Amino acid sequence: MRIDSVSIYNFRNLQNGRVFCDNTFVTLVGNNGQGKTNFLEAIYTACYGNSFRKTKLSQLCTFNTHEAAVSITAFLDDGEKIKITYRIKDGKRTIYIQNKEIRDRKELIYMIPCIVFTHEDIDFVQGSPEEKRKFYNQTMTLYDPLFLDDMRKYKNLLKQRNSLLKDKRYDLLNLYDYQLAEVGMDIQKKRSQLVKEFNELFPELFKRISLDEEKVYVVYKPSWKDCRSEEEAENKLRNSLENDMRYQTTTTGPHRDRFIVVRNGKNYIETASTGQKRLVSLILRSAQASFFTRKTGTKPIILLDDVLLELDIEKRERFLDNTRGFSQAFFTFLPGEAYFREGSFSGKVYRVIDGEFSDYEKSI
Image (cartoon, rainbow, N blue to C red; front, side, top):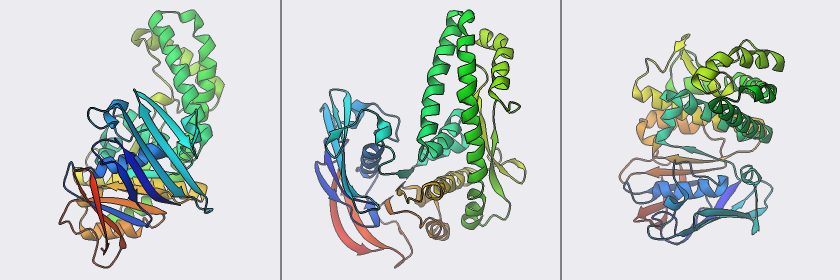
């Protein structure tokens, strides 16, 4: 799988035009604010129908414009050439695959899998439990459409149950408790299996890149840890009703689950330095890519936004040596930065200035 080209129209600060990407390694070089990250965002948005940034649709459009578009052409593993177009007009988005409009983003997200590495990834290491859950939810939805359905259904039921609690309509709660328990237990079982399989990859990958001899792994702590069936989960909800009424929200369930990175039997993040936390986030993303390939047999496209700059050249080389399982990689770097050890990679390099791309072939 490989992206062949990206066509831009009024997206962020990027100049309108077509950028050719038919190479295993595509490197973007430029100062901050020139458009490198915006280009990665354009690719990701076309692949998933959403930005990896917390942003409004209107912010994706070039200043003083009300419409934008990104089109990517790509070759799938079977050689088929596809085109995906993402458009924004007057605050609404439309997505097309082979010029046919799709109604549900679910039709898109399994087409061209890509995984993005950003500075904000540290949030799913040191951030709130919700931020950490997002990473593992994303890991699941990358390959399991049924899990995506479960999450959509659970969030909808949870929203309705919380609305009843706020309106003090307690007599209707039983209508939702069993449904919430049923789908919630499915989510808990899938998360438990995910962490079990994820820990078959992550600890060894962490050891090879960091050279840390202590085992570092992920621990899953479900809110319904003592529940083994839908009936037990339903009883848990009923037994928590007093607290739910007091706080006017559902206080137990998968939306309260926690994920912890452990080293030597203790919460690693509580004592880790900022550099160590960033390394954990980088390796978690790498493990996510490897996990996706293990589950699907498909190698994803990876987008790395300046994250390698925080690694010394030895760690960078070890990281890249252990992430060869991708089909195509996009990197961003600052000018003058030693991208990779000389002669170790070859690929297409673009210089990015004010959203404009000038390309040249170069060994790096």
